[in-house]
Length: 270
Image 1 (cartoon, rainbow, N blue to C red):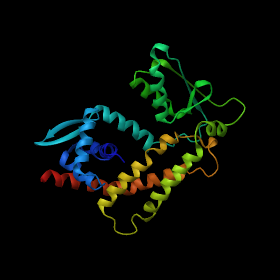
Image 2: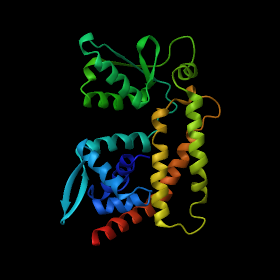
Image 3: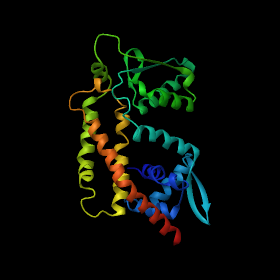
Image 4: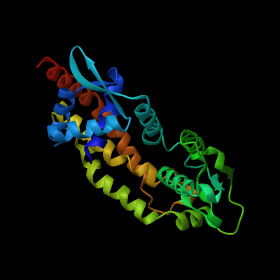
């Protein structure tokens, strides 16, 4: 994981619960546990400040960074996908997106495509883009924030054509590749979930595993944007993988938070 991603996860998983500010010394101490050196942390935090994700603030005379409003928006959007997904897996409704861009503004075509792809949409027939209907509000919010909503039209409904939901999904998404991602996630994290609590576990281990669990899981709800079960093949591992993710989140969060508070507190006293 890039230092930027590790730092943003730290704000998302911990700092937001405690005022949203971390001293530079505390951030360095936390990232050290994940194998990042001080210079990498300082450089990444500085770049995040320039890009508007963080703002520099001094608290009690100590230099540090707080999450910006823009950074908080990004984390809140990620929360919905990462932690609250899976609610409409038996809903066979689809979202079809069409957009019309004047030739004089053709660069906006790339921006819309790239943003839809980032959310998990796939190219559909006749230059359309498709996704499960549950993505409607997330897509609308993203396009409004980017100033692109006026170019886009959404249609929501069920499939009314020859074929099936599974044919639509297999034509638009690499289902074998996505299921392989679930398999790889389970190979790493299911043993941790099964073994956690069987022997004394340290808060430091909880912090490291918690950070690794979230960073490993994060790409999956975007690769698989909540494809309905009617569209996925036998042996689809999404439910099993999500169950492991949520179990680990419950298991690791208390110890990880204790470690976070102890580490940033110790750094502040130095």
